[in-house]
Amino acid sequence: MATLTTSSAWADVRLTPEEERIAAEETLRFLSEVSDEAARALAEKSEEAARSLHRVWDFSSFSPATIPFLIATLGTGEVRIVLHGGLVKMEETGVPALWRMQLGETQSFVLALIPPSVVAMASRGEAELKIPESAPEGVFAAPAILEELREALSKADTTRWSTKPGHMVEMTRQPLAPGDQAYLAGVLGLGDIDIRLSGFADSRIMSTKVRGIWHTQILNHAGKGLLDAYVVGLIPAEVPATPEELEDTVARCKEFAGVVEADRARGALG
Image 1 (cartoon, rainbow, N blue to C red):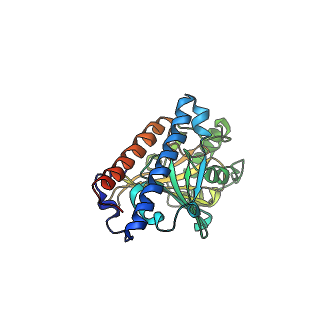
Image 2: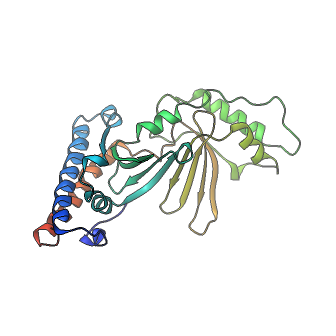
């Protein structure tokens, strides 16, 4: 999560004094609305209230000059999601549960633990894992791995996402033959969701054509593989924000607003 302590975040955003004044006012109003929405969900003290949180602010609702100022203020988070090979792109901002989304030429901010469009896309995969009756030469462990995934899938609830980790089959602990990885990839196929997570390591999580089965890989910053696994669940647990993080949403909005207010007070804006 980005940390904003000075106005240096928007130092490179070139606006006139009047544009800065408007941008600061609209940014403060937006941060207040985001904070209020998150606080309302928290006040209900239920997971369902947090899960149902969803509000969209189209970029067109702001003055054009406000957008670069606002983007610089919010910063970026650790999660980036691409749907349909780039038709839809989204990334977490520095405010938990607040996402920036782009669909074609249309851009918006979305407040949700996970954008509903991701859930909708994840729900469209094939309901069953169909395993071929026989495997080609050079394949050893893959059939057993597929059977384990099918069994885990039959026990999982793939109608809703969970904050609890799903069943994982770690490839690095399997006695893989040369043809196993290619065979697994061929049977499971490739879905339309590509997720990247950054942090202490870099993760790539890709949906398969089977609803509820994901291929996840984690590399350290030197490019060395730390994990290669298949995970069962409608959406991997590490992708959505958690209901508890809405407290951070409120706190982060107040922190960012405080910085803008402080810079306005000392005449650095507008």
